[in-house]
Image (tube, rainbow, N blue to C red; front, side, top):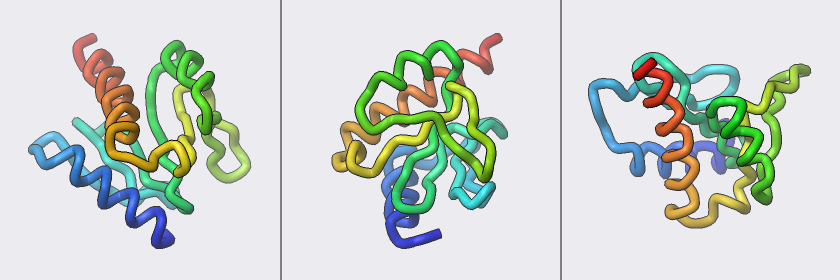
Length: 112
């Protein structure tokens, strides 16, 4: 991973804190942050944030500037995998918005 991705991973790590249910792994060229074994977000090359949400939430969030459906290799993912550009993530409040969006969907899916 490049320096921008590492810097984003550091910011994500600081904002998520620590917990028994939080795990960090290298996956798909991404520094992934998992909760209870499910990908929450990932810090990608060039400081792009990969965010996992549900399809409905993803469709709504795609209207935000700097957000697009993630592409992994040759595969375009569905609305539940979003790439958020580093320009959008300039401050920790905005980064926290995206972390909270991913956490909300993750918590809802665990409750089902």
